[in-house]
Picture 1 (tube, rainbow, N blue to C red):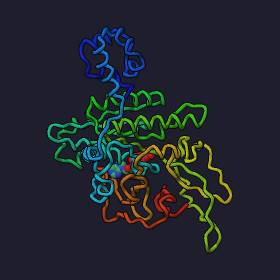
Picture 2: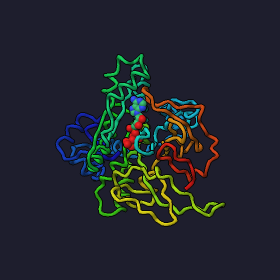
Picture 3: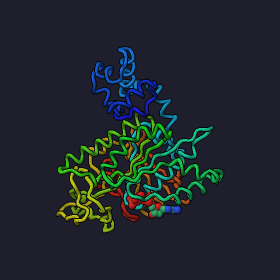
Picture 4: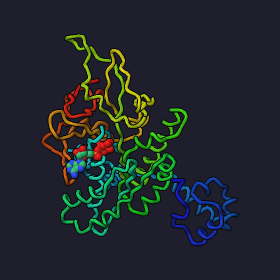
Length: 386
Ligand SMILES: Nc1ncnc2c1ncn2[C@@H]1O[C@H](COP(=O)(O)OP(=O)(O)OP(=O)(O)O)[C@@H](O)[C@H]1O
């Protein structure tokens, strides 16, 4: 919040006019100065200076609220996913004020989910309220035609308003880590100005590969700083922040089978994982995208969310998307949530977006230990333990 631009604040005219003659641009620029310096620079009286600086401090202090107030705020801004059972488990849908991650193999539908959620937010505006969405498209994967298709099929009654809906999706396409950082720093003002209810970063993993740093530790800390900015944005403005993430592979020791003594062999298709880029894996090491995965004796490959353990701790809710064993449907797995148990639902991608098949839900999950859950990266790969 200290990076908020002074020009975006509702300040008195005389303060604005004095500020325009200085090099002070952000809240932080002012708060780093002593009250006496601020008085002199802005030609303020002691009382005016105190009032001005108290206001700036209040912008940086995390707001205080009771659990009751928090519940009311969150229920109000949560984004339902369109399935009664799934939304009940998630306490109203995607939690506002927090960071939600969709992670899964290529083509499983991460972008489709993001677009579906965007259309839900836009269509949810009622009574003169026109919410908007901020979409950071790092892979240039978003096509307006697909949004139009979803809106036309899902909300035919709103089809005359589609141009207005499209104009309320504010797109960013950063190409480098530096431009990503600039966007993150400016998001707070944009969210307030545009009345955005959701910020989507699709995908964070493809942007993470462009982090220029000599050491992996520094890459991890830059990634954590992005996460901190996104979390702070979600928390301070009580909006949903959604990121998509890719998968990577790790080698795990094979578990001996009780009968044969031979560990489970990975299905050949399981090697088909997204290796277009280098990403941080769960041990915060780099997986070189170009290099073939070396086969270690007595080890098996398994797919896990990219970006490492530190990243996993930053996100509040993790929803894994995976292919189904024996049907054209795909699955959404609540893998990490502060409000819901581990659960699996089937979904299909349709012209209207996403349809969750409630009859196929499984929220008294009795499979392997959720901590050992293995992402199914291709249709037909059986669910088994690492
Ligand atoms: N109009 C549509 N109707 C039905 N299914 C569609 C439609 N458009 C796209 N799809 C499905 O969406 C899938 C692609 O989903 P999406 O682009 O969201 O994948 P992704 O997980 O974001 O992949 P990546 O990680 O490569 O970006 C396609 O495989 C296709 O099956």
